[in-house]
Amino acid sequence: MRKIAIFCLVLCLSACIPPGRDYSWPQNEAVNSASPKLETDNSIFGQKPGDVPLATWVERPVTPNAVTINNSTYVVQSGDTLRGIANRTGASSQIIAATNHLTAPYVIQPGQRLKITGGRYHKVGSGETGIAIARAYRVSWRDVIAFNGLEDPFVLRVGQKLLLPAALLAESSNMTIEQRAAAFDVDIDDIVTGSEPALANSGAPVSDWRKAVTSTKIPVAAAPPVGFSGQFVWPIDGKLLSSFGSKGGGKVNDGLNIAVAKGTPIRASADGVVAYSGDEIGVFGGLILLNHGEGWVTAYGHADKLDVTRGQKVTAGDIIGVAGDSGYVQEPQLHFEIRKDRKPVNPASHLPKRV
Image 1 (cartoon, rainbow, N blue to C red):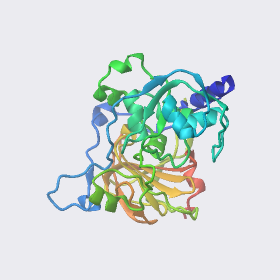
Image 2 (cartoon, rainbow, N blue to C red):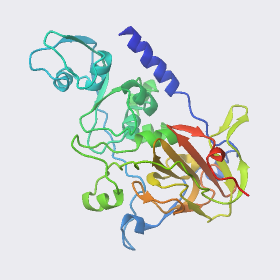
Image 3 (tube, rainbow, N blue to C red):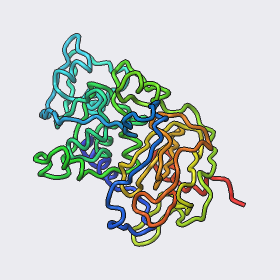
Image 4 (cartoon, rainbow, N blue to C red):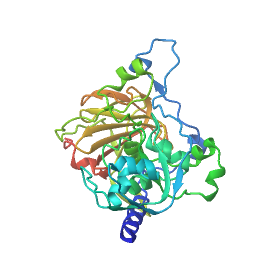
């Protein structure tokens, strides 16, 4: 148990190291303190002119209802299943399996002694996202991933129990939902891993979210693309403002910043599915994330207009929005990133050479 606890601690500490962000331009709080007012074409939601616009990212609120249990030992009885033991003890079946080194198909024997890891467990509800759960408890979503050993594609299941790390602030239990949301910091990796709504155990992600939302009226998880050619194209033409990598003084650019005229179309760099379209990350303003499969994700920041919505399929070269100066920048530009297995890579190494 001690080794497992140490392992979890190491994971959590590594998960807390914040990824680099675009610090190429100084933040202008006086100009950019308000959330960007993004224009989005309602036709992408299947809406008619005059309809009330739908949010570009639907997130179901989470009511904190975690149950705290103590460390214990459970002796397996005849007829027991791992899920049944989890329900009886209040722990997570995944955590029980990991703690006791059980592997699929998780065969257990009568008389076997299982260690039950104590802590706070949240039971996932319908439509809840990882980010929303983390917000509700004022914890880091990256820590929740590490604590529970969650893996790609990070889709939660209704009824799944998540072991929660300690709250970031001691007084968080006295904070309102609005105060927790205001204090919570979200980055691109959080959006990639924690924005899909939980599914029923028998459910599966859909291939086109737009069709599903018009019929179900509830958020559903989008199916990731199958296979990827590995080929990217430039999303926009313009002067390079800032290259990838360290800028000194602890400042890091996780992508490229390209100067363009306001209103210049932003094009998908490769075939994929929209993982996110919105303005949750203030520093980037209007942001679009595309999932290309095989662990590849591209990010497009500082957009003034969004032309796609989460779950929508796109083809390389499709217009997904228009460039602007939303977020913390002082002139119109595109912040463009390529990520592989959640880690930023140099886009210049994966894009065609410019003549």
